[in-house]
Length: 318
Ligand code: PMV
Image (cartoon, rainbow, N blue to C red; front, side, top):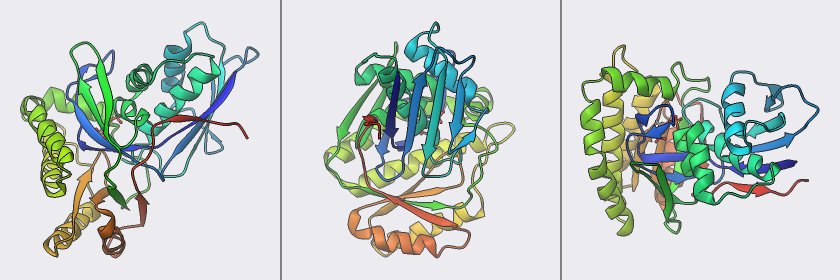
């Protein structure tokens, strides 16, 4: 009745932004992401017939804010007549700050909960369960470069490559939680941004370009379509009413640093999610120079680095 699992966050290059079916949390668009290796969330789940309610602890502290989403996810995995559970989460990077902590959390949760409940769904079924809690979490079940296809009935997720050694350098410009959740921001974009319909209609073009770039291991082509897709998503947000602006001053200064590195000939590009952190994707030989330039950029608090890693998996109890 007890199991522990680990998942790493994933960072989208072609972004998920918008829901086709809010009740089932199905995405309006397909997306393409990188699963990381050195950032992680570990979740342990223990079902216990003596408990009167679910309990959640994050990094050793009681966490009531996330409890409803966690309980609903446990219901979907183990059935609503399940026993209550004690859930413990440990995360080695900032939470709810645009670093995809919900992706690693729910990916780890569905693996730990299904093992604790004695169920063994296949990876796609686990990805769908994770995606019902947090759209991007479905991708963290898979390793390397991951494609999530927004089908008409349900999502399909697959790893398309895990042998291209891309590296990620994250410039953390703000550690605290974001002011507007991505779910709320997506709804606002869909309801009020004049660019939303075009965003949805053009997404498959970007997916095709990115897949083509990955299949040819063409870093510059992947860079061009990824930066385009990121800035397009943020344009949708900026044009929403009221506007959603996740960037801060340092986010823009970091973009200028990446432009300078590019003009020096370094293989690097940026992407930014629902938060002010800038993520630089680069080839391994460029990673030390990218990390040092971003760490010297004004407003950057700290640098996190990661290569590409494995999908969510069960850990042996210690
Ligand atoms: O999965 P959510 O609801 O946290 O949304 C993730 C949205 C972005 O990170 C901005 C884009 C993405 O594809 O991960």
